[in-house]
Amino acid sequence: DARSGTSRRSRATPRSISTRPRDPRVVPKFGPRVIPQDPAATDTVASFEVSGDDSGSSLLVVAHLPGLPSAADASLEVSEREVRIRTDCPAARHALDVGLPCGVDAGSCVAKWSKRTSKLTLRLQKL
Image (cartoon, rainbow, N blue to C red; front, side, top):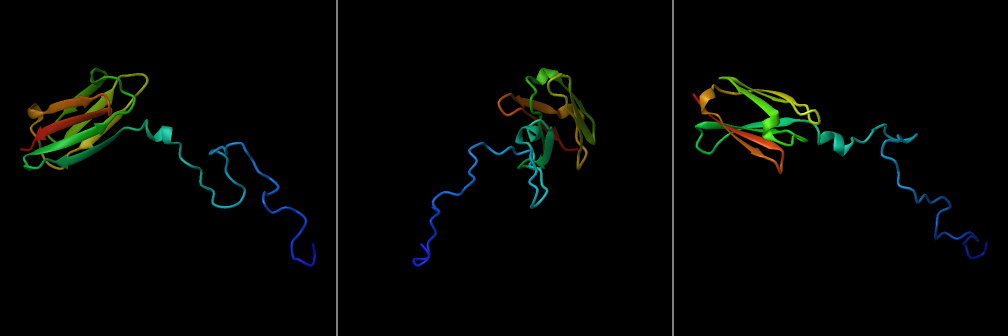
């Protein structure tokens, strides 16, 4: 009605409502051209973290190796300044070269594998 200021068309629902879920790979025509990263893809990338323990006498190297079913599928090489981790599993191929901030005793390496978190934790005594 023109006198009351309202139109005859209902304002309760917009004309075009899509009930289909939006495909995250589709880039909109307008707006920023950012393609969302697939969260499943980031779960397949190996990563590591190097830190010191509380006493300061050893280093901890924690390597995240997603998709690796067992520590038996990984090879580990420890030298005074570097740790190399390679996986032989066809489903999860990873190669990590970890440079260490200080010298370590390669013979003192203690490794622990967590199947639940897919993490290999190494404790190395500092020189």
